[in-house]
Image (cartoon, rainbow, N blue to C red; front, top):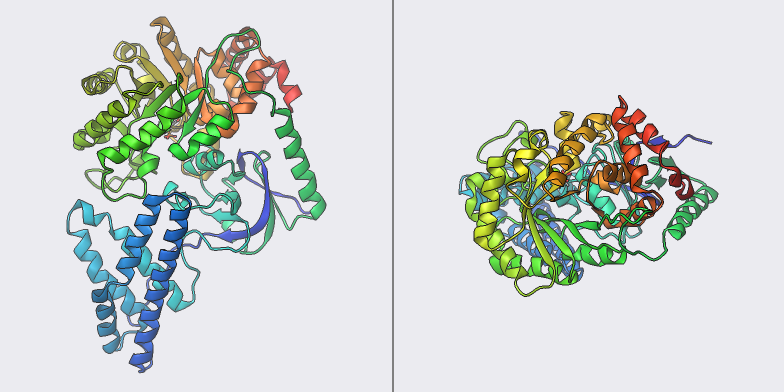
Length: 564
Ligand code: PEP
Ligand code: MG
């Protein structure tokens, strides 16, 4: 029997289907590409390709609209209009008349527009990537190459890519994608986070994933982190039965999170917008611990309006009457670029650049507008709004953010602890704010100096590393001393074994992708607070991530019952 391919399993469940790969970049047509002399036929081919691209974009826009994704629909319709621009068509025709081959003529005609847009200020510059996308789609059609972007399929498929950016997945139909497999991306990459939120099984950091030919049937096991090529029907059935058995074990009544001896640990959901609320409630979330507001606006080139923001925030607050909703202000930059919040200059290391709260230095108006919209949304709702800033480094920044919040009428400002400097000096920060929320994804990335998007560094991005556990403990202790809450909203909170350790380290709430809630609830309910503390101390005493996990497990006897 062939061995399965092994990567990192980041979203549990089993998915089987044909591979569909996101095509790579479309090459630039050769500068000297000439047509054979039939200019009329060449022009017709170029214009037909542009029209086909426009029709396809319009069609996908309509589909996005039907799924309630109006911003996606608007972007796609605007792109369709660009593809049908008469000036562009004239430019292509003129090039073909000079003897230039259709694909190269398209490339050059778009080049003229591209330069105009790129030099026309922030707003229009953000449209350049839309234009490049149309150009590449038309060239791919003319050269018979695979069209870039999310592949089309008339049957459910396994999406394979080098990596997935949040923007790639904005238009995904979760009903059609049975699993994700990527070559890059660690367990805390946004591919992994999106997969968990959608409840789609996923394996990341799988070497050679993109070499899997389109149409190859594969079986993806997102818990084991394996991909089996051309599986037998019996193997698919066995994998599905095992996944179903685990789901059945967890389908008991939800109830609030607590250890076996009744120490309450509120279990909250990480969401990217109102569309994730239903799944959060279905999994028994007691509130929202991380509302990633930048996910609302990834496909936008202009800032969202005040009314639009207010609506997106109120929709979530209304869903949790009496519960807590922690909203994070825009965390733009690095792998979540927002076209309307560009960094001030070129950044060789975007993860170490102007991201998160730092962006407010150059765009204070955007932060103020967001806080005002949040305050308006909270007025009259029964949820408790808390607002936190991402990527905070020191007490001065924390104080400035808290002051902005209070000026806007937000009474409970907090900060994310994801920069090691902030964790090391948590005692300074704690007096400035009402709560902490530890972002273990970035905290691990920065503590271990390992970019979370690079699959080959997955071993460095492991929050089980004792150094990361130390930073968590150093953050939780001053929060406890000050009587303030200290949650974890990084992906570590969704690991049922690590969740017990985090509670043992002094963490007071856990927030995770909704599908992770049942298993974490079950793991906590099978252990006392003392057991969690002992497991945490054993993990911190270890020297490696693997040893820390093993040491913790030895003190958590209830895991076996859950098959963990
Ligand atoms: C984190 O860094 O742990 C976090 C929760 O924020 P994000 O994953 O959105 O960067
Ligand atoms: Mg983060």
